[in-house]
Amino acid sequence: MPSDVRDRLRRRLWSELDRPKQPRRSHIRVPVVAATCVAAVLVAGSVVFAQNVSHAPDQMRAAMGVGSEPSPAEAQLDRCYAAALAVRAVPIRPQWKPVATSEVNGVTVTSARVAGKPLFCETTTTAVNVSDPDAVPANAGTTTTGVLFATANGTVAGVTDPRWRSFDLRVTVAPDNTVTAEPEVSDGLFVARLGVAVGPGVKVEAVHETAHTFGPIPPRLVRQENGS
Image (cartoon, rainbow, N blue to C red):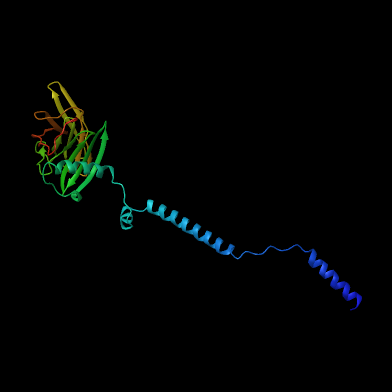
Protein backbone atom coordinates (compact mmCIF):
# COMPACT_ATOMS: atom_id res chain seq x y z
CA MET A 1 0.00 0.00 0.00
CA PRO A 2 1.44 3.38 -0.91
CA SER A 3 2.56 5.42 2.05
CA ASP A 4 0.30 8.40 1.26
CA VAL A 5 -2.78 6.15 1.18
CA ARG A 6 -1.75 4.51 4.42
CA ASP A 7 -1.34 7.93 6.06
CA ARG A 8 -4.83 9.04 4.97
CA LEU A 9 -6.40 5.88 6.38
CA ARG A 10 -4.53 6.31 9.64
CA ARG A 11 -5.70 9.92 10.01
CA ARG A 12 -9.34 8.95 9.29
CA LEU A 13 -9.19 6.14 11.85
CA TRP A 14 -7.77 8.40 14.55
CA SER A 15 -10.38 11.09 13.79
CA GLU A 16 -13.16 8.53 14.18
CA LEU A 17 -11.71 7.32 17.47
CA ASP A 18 -11.36 10.86 18.83
CA ARG A 19 -15.01 11.85 17.97
CA PRO A 20 -17.29 11.74 21.10
CA LYS A 21 -20.03 9.16 21.04
CA GLN A 22 -23.50 10.41 20.18
CA PRO A 23 -26.16 9.39 22.74
CA ARG A 24 -28.67 6.88 21.52
CA ARG A 25 -31.89 8.49 20.51
CA SER A 26 -34.89 7.37 22.52
CA HIS A 27 -37.87 6.25 20.52
CA ILE A 28 -40.10 6.64 23.58
CA ARG A 29 -39.99 10.45 23.72
CA VAL A 30 -42.32 11.00 20.79
CA PRO A 31 -45.25 9.04 22.29
CA VAL A 32 -44.67 10.69 25.69
CA VAL A 33 -44.69 14.17 24.16
CA ALA A 34 -47.75 13.30 22.11
CA ALA A 35 -49.57 11.99 25.20
CA THR A 36 -48.67 15.17 27.09
CA CYS A 37 -50.07 17.31 24.29
CA VAL A 38 -53.28 15.28 24.19
CA ALA A 39 -53.69 15.65 27.96
CA ALA A 40 -53.12 19.40 27.71
CA VAL A 41 -55.75 19.67 24.98
CA LEU A 42 -58.23 17.67 27.05
CA VAL A 43 -57.63 19.82 30.13
CA ALA A 44 -57.96 23.02 28.11
CA GLY A 45 -61.15 21.69 26.56
CA SER A 46 -62.56 20.93 29.99
CA VAL A 47 -61.79 24.46 31.18
CA VAL A 48 -63.42 26.01 28.12
CA PHE A 49 -66.47 23.76 28.54
CA ALA A 50 -66.80 24.71 32.21
CA GLN A 51 -66.52 28.40 31.37
CA ASN A 52 -69.12 28.11 28.62
CA VAL A 53 -71.52 26.22 30.89
CA SER A 54 -71.23 28.85 33.62
CA HIS A 55 -72.24 31.57 31.14
CA ALA A 56 -74.89 29.54 29.30
CA PRO A 57 -78.56 30.58 29.52
CA ASP A 58 -80.79 28.55 31.81
CA GLN A 59 -82.40 26.79 28.82
CA MET A 60 -79.00 25.62 27.55
CA ARG A 61 -77.89 24.60 31.04
CA ALA A 62 -81.04 22.53 31.45
CA ALA A 63 -80.50 20.89 28.05
CA MET A 64 -76.94 19.99 29.07
CA GLY A 65 -78.21 18.54 32.34
CA VAL A 66 -76.57 21.24 34.44
CA GLY A 67 -78.71 22.57 37.29
CA SER A 68 -79.13 26.26 38.16
CA GLU A 69 -79.86 27.99 41.43
CA PRO A 70 -83.41 29.36 41.80
CA SER A 71 -83.82 33.13 41.79
CA PRO A 72 -84.57 34.85 45.13
CA ALA A 73 -88.22 35.28 44.11
CA GLU A 74 -88.54 31.61 43.14
CA ALA A 75 -86.92 30.54 46.41
CA GLN A 76 -89.45 32.64 48.34
CA LEU A 77 -92.34 31.17 46.35
CA ASP A 78 -91.11 27.66 47.17
CA ARG A 79 -91.58 28.49 50.84
CA CYS A 80 -94.92 30.23 50.28
CA TYR A 81 -96.24 27.32 48.20
CA ALA A 82 -95.30 24.79 50.88
CA ALA A 83 -97.09 26.86 53.55
CA ALA A 84 -100.21 27.28 51.41
CA LEU A 85 -100.31 23.61 50.45
CA ALA A 86 -100.29 22.69 54.13
CA VAL A 87 -103.58 24.60 54.52
CA ARG A 88 -105.50 23.51 51.43
CA ALA A 89 -105.14 22.40 47.83
CA VAL A 90 -103.65 25.11 45.62
CA PRO A 91 -102.52 25.23 41.97
CA ILE A 92 -99.34 23.27 41.30
CA ARG A 93 -96.01 25.00 41.88
CA PRO A 94 -95.15 25.60 38.17
CA GLN A 95 -98.24 27.84 37.98
CA TRP A 96 -96.78 30.19 40.62
CA LYS A 97 -95.08 32.94 38.60
CA PRO A 98 -93.11 35.64 40.47
CA VAL A 99 -93.63 39.30 39.66
CA ALA A 100 -91.37 41.06 42.17
CA THR A 101 -89.68 40.54 45.53
CA SER A 102 -87.99 42.85 48.02
CA GLU A 103 -86.62 42.67 51.55
CA VAL A 104 -86.67 45.42 54.18
CA ASN A 105 -85.48 44.91 57.76
CA GLY A 106 -85.73 41.14 57.53
CA VAL A 107 -89.23 41.12 56.03
CA THR A 108 -89.44 39.84 52.45
CA VAL A 109 -92.55 40.46 50.36
CA THR A 110 -93.05 38.65 47.06
CA SER A 111 -95.81 39.37 44.58
CA ALA A 112 -96.81 36.71 42.10
CA ARG A 113 -99.56 35.32 39.93
CA VAL A 114 -100.90 31.86 40.62
CA ALA A 115 -102.74 30.37 37.67
CA GLY A 116 -103.15 33.98 36.52
CA LYS A 117 -104.51 35.28 39.86
CA PRO A 118 -102.62 37.81 42.02
CA LEU A 119 -100.97 36.51 45.19
CA PHE A 120 -98.75 38.04 47.87
CA CYS A 121 -96.46 36.36 50.34
CA GLU A 122 -94.58 37.83 53.29
CA THR A 123 -91.77 35.87 54.93
CA THR A 124 -89.42 36.32 57.86
CA THR A 125 -87.01 33.86 59.43
CA THR A 126 -89.83 32.46 61.57
CA ALA A 127 -93.12 33.17 59.79
CA VAL A 128 -94.93 32.96 56.47
CA ASN A 129 -98.08 34.86 55.47
CA VAL A 130 -99.81 34.18 52.17
CA SER A 131 -102.82 35.89 50.61
CA ASP A 132 -105.76 33.90 49.29
CA PRO A 133 -105.47 33.61 45.49
CA ASP A 134 -109.25 33.13 45.27
CA ALA A 135 -110.07 36.26 47.29
CA VAL A 136 -111.88 39.23 45.77
CA PRO A 137 -109.97 42.52 46.16
CA ALA A 138 -111.37 45.09 48.59
CA ASN A 139 -111.70 48.01 46.19
CA ALA A 140 -110.92 51.60 47.07
CA GLY A 141 -114.24 53.35 46.56
CA THR A 142 -115.44 53.04 42.97
CA THR A 143 -111.94 52.40 41.58
CA THR A 144 -110.45 49.04 40.62
CA THR A 145 -107.49 49.49 42.95
CA GLY A 146 -108.04 46.87 45.62
CA VAL A 147 -106.33 45.41 48.68
CA LEU A 148 -105.80 41.67 48.96
CA PHE A 149 -103.22 41.42 51.72
CA ALA A 150 -102.33 43.17 54.99
CA THR A 151 -100.11 42.04 57.87
CA ALA A 152 -98.98 42.96 61.35
CA ASN A 153 -95.59 43.93 59.87
CA GLY A 154 -97.24 46.81 58.03
CA THR A 155 -97.39 45.24 54.57
CA VAL A 156 -100.39 46.18 52.44
CA ALA A 157 -100.65 44.79 48.92
CA GLY A 158 -103.14 44.41 46.12
CA VAL A 159 -104.03 45.28 42.54
CA THR A 160 -103.75 48.69 40.90
CA ASP A 161 -106.29 50.51 38.75
CA PRO A 162 -104.66 50.55 35.28
CA ARG A 163 -105.51 54.26 34.97
CA TRP A 164 -103.33 55.10 37.98
CA ARG A 165 -99.64 55.73 37.38
CA SER A 166 -98.97 56.26 41.09
CA PHE A 167 -100.80 56.80 44.35
CA ASP A 168 -100.29 56.91 48.10
CA LEU A 169 -101.57 54.49 50.68
CA ARG A 170 -102.75 55.99 53.96
CA VAL A 171 -103.53 54.18 57.19
CA THR A 172 -105.29 55.83 60.12
CA VAL A 173 -103.65 54.42 63.24
CA ALA A 174 -105.52 56.75 65.59
CA PRO A 175 -107.90 59.70 65.08
CA ASP A 176 -104.93 62.07 65.12
CA ASN A 177 -102.28 59.72 63.69
CA THR A 178 -101.98 58.64 60.06
CA VAL A 179 -99.16 56.88 58.22
CA THR A 180 -98.66 57.32 54.48
CA ALA A 181 -96.43 55.42 52.04
CA GLU A 182 -96.06 55.26 48.28
CA PRO A 183 -96.48 51.67 47.06
CA GLU A 184 -94.13 49.93 44.66
CA VAL A 185 -96.08 48.92 41.56
CA SER A 186 -95.02 46.03 39.32
CA ASP A 187 -97.11 44.63 36.49
CA GLY A 188 -100.37 45.89 37.95
CA LEU A 189 -99.64 44.71 41.51
CA PHE A 190 -98.70 47.03 44.37
CA VAL A 191 -96.86 46.51 47.65
CA ALA A 192 -96.70 49.17 50.37
CA ARG A 193 -94.68 49.04 53.58
CA LEU A 194 -96.28 51.23 56.22
CA GLY A 195 -94.34 50.07 59.28
CA VAL A 196 -97.46 49.78 61.44
CA ALA A 197 -99.74 46.82 62.03
CA VAL A 198 -102.71 46.75 59.68
CA GLY A 199 -105.48 44.60 61.10
CA PRO A 200 -109.27 44.38 61.02
CA GLY A 201 -111.01 47.69 61.60
CA VAL A 202 -108.03 49.82 60.56
CA LYS A 203 -108.96 52.48 58.02
CA VAL A 204 -106.90 52.13 54.84
CA GLU A 205 -107.19 54.60 51.96
CA ALA A 206 -105.76 55.04 48.49
CA VAL A 207 -104.96 58.68 47.82
CA HIS A 208 -105.14 59.55 44.13
CA GLU A 209 -106.38 63.10 43.53
CA THR A 210 -108.74 62.36 46.42
CA ALA A 211 -108.97 59.74 49.17
CA HIS A 212 -110.67 56.42 48.39
CA THR A 213 -111.42 54.14 51.33
CA PHE A 214 -110.86 50.41 50.93
CA GLY A 215 -113.50 47.91 51.95
CA PRO A 216 -112.84 45.07 54.43
CA ILE A 217 -109.53 43.40 53.64
CA PRO A 218 -109.85 39.67 52.80
CA PRO A 219 -108.41 37.18 55.31
CA ARG A 220 -105.08 35.56 54.55
CA LEU A 221 -104.81 31.96 53.41
CA VAL A 222 -101.75 31.43 55.62
CA ARG A 223 -101.52 33.50 58.78
CA GLN A 224 -98.42 33.20 60.96
CA GLU A 225 -96.99 35.68 63.40
CA ASN A 226 -93.27 35.92 64.14
CA GLY A 227 -92.29 33.22 66.57
CA SER A 228 -95.41 31.13 65.92
